[in-house]
Image (cartoon, rainbow, N blue to C red; front, side, top):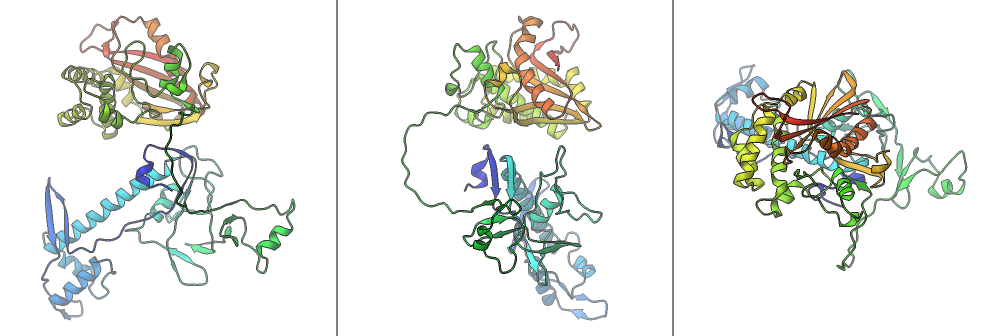
Length: 493
C-alpha cells in the first residue's frame, strides 16, 4: 500500500486505487483567495438586511443570516429563501457575495487538485488499473447511487472515461473507454450489489466468499454455500477468478547491500551507452550525461528525474542546458505561446543552475528555435503535444531488442492529425554538438534513436513516421539566410 504522493514517478503492471474520493465543503467563518494579483480575506457577514418574500412576508435579517449560514456550511440549501432573494442578499460587491465567491473558488481548486492526484494514481498502471468507486445510496428496493456533483469526483470520472447517452449519463455497461485506441474488454464494471443508475438496472457480478475474498462471477444462488459450489466443479461450471484483499502486517526490517537487478526495459540512452561501450554491463548504467559526439543528454523518463538531477548536480552540469531547453519548449507548446517570458527563463536558469555561458547558449538556441521553419512546420499540425511518454513492447529490430523486452521514454514533441491517423511527426531537440560533423555522420549518429521512436509509433498504428532531430545550437551550413536555421537531421520511416 502506497500513498499517491509517494507513487509519483513510479509505474507498476497493476495498480489498485482504493477510492475515488471528493472534497468537503468549507465551513470556515472566513474565506481567503487571490484577486487581481493580491490576497482577499472575507469573514462571514455579521449582519444581513431583511428581505420581503413574494407573498409579502418580511423576513428579519437575523433569520436571513441563519439561512445563509445553513446553505454555505454544507448543510443544504434554503427552502424558504428563494434563489432570486438569495441573489439580492449576494448582490455583486456585497460581503455575502465575496464570501460565497471565495468559498466556491476554494471548492473548485480543491476539486482540481484532487482530480490531478487521482490522475497521477491511475496513470501509475502499465497494464491494469482497478478503480474502487463508491457513492451514497438511496433507500428503496434497489440501491441507487447518489452523487454530489460539487464535491464528489466519482460521477465526473465516470462521465469522462465512459461513453455517455443523450442525457450525458455514463454507460456503466460499456466494455470500452472513450479514449483513442480503446478496445472491447478494456473496461469492466464489477459490482457487489444490485443497483440502479438512471434508467438502467445492474445485477451484482461479484461477491465476497466466506473468507472475505472478492469472487468474480454471478451472485451465488440462494441456499448454495461456498462448500457446495466448490464440491461440484466441472467444465460447465468453472471456478470463478478470485483475488484476496489483505492488510499489511508489521515485519522486521534488515538493511543490506543488494545488487542492482538487470532492467527488463530499455531507453534510447541505455541502448546508446551500451553500443558505445566496450562491454554490455547494463547493471552499471545509471544515466548517460553526454553522448560520444558531445550532445547534451536529456532525461527520457527512464532515468533519474530532471528535478532530482537539478537538486544534486553542481553548477556547470552538462545536462542542465538540455534539460532547461526541453522544459522551455514544453511550456511553449502546452501554453500555446510564441515566446518565453523573461521571468520563466530566469526561473529555469535558477532551477538548473545554468552558468553564465550556459544561459547565453540557452537564449541563442531558444531564439533560433522560435524563428525556425521546422517549428512553424510542427505548429501547422492540428494536434501538437509535448513530452509524450511511451512504454511499449520491444522493438522487432534485433540490434535493439536484445537490450530489453520493453521500450520506454518520452518524445519531445509529437504532432498528429486526428483526420489522418496514418502519419505522425516527431521532433527531438538536440543541444550541444559541433559544426564539424558531416550530414552522413549525423544520419548514422541519430539513426538508432529514430528507429526506436518509429517502432513505438508504428505499434500505435501510425504507418508513416517522420522523425526530425533539431540541433538548436548548430546553424544549418546549407542555408545562407538570416536568422540562421537550426540544422535538422530527418528520417522518414
